[in-house]
Image (cartoon, rainbow, N blue to C red):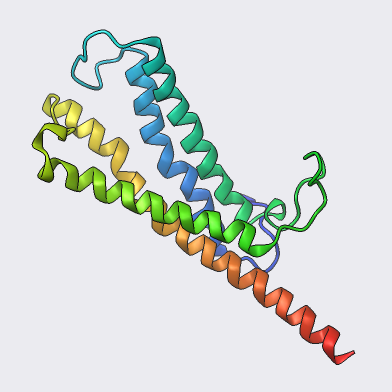
Length: 178
């Protein structure tokens, strides 16, 4: 059986959702890498500069890194900063220090999803479905899983917040009784 190294008290569904986030971002990243590698995943766009290729690869690395941060909401490094991090190592993570950026991420990802699907209707020149049917099908297969990212991140964030604030509230209540 797969061991996921979650903390005690973290619901199994939250662990599974947190591990799903990097997986739903992976197909789009692989598509972008294929694009930069020159594979025929999109219509030819003329000469592409090194800077554009670097941007596309950077987008892939950043999106996957942000997706991997979701794991911190179900693992110990979401509660206590790992000791190897300079200046912060060993300190407890305040719940809102994780929750606020995560919910801002949910908002940004939802906005991007809405723009992605609405932009072609507002401005048909921005339609991304301009390749061959096979290219468009591959693009859809690689990018549609991203629609799961915002709700998965939101659910894991809510579970994290509930777990962290319930535990802190229980400790404070116990201290008040002493």
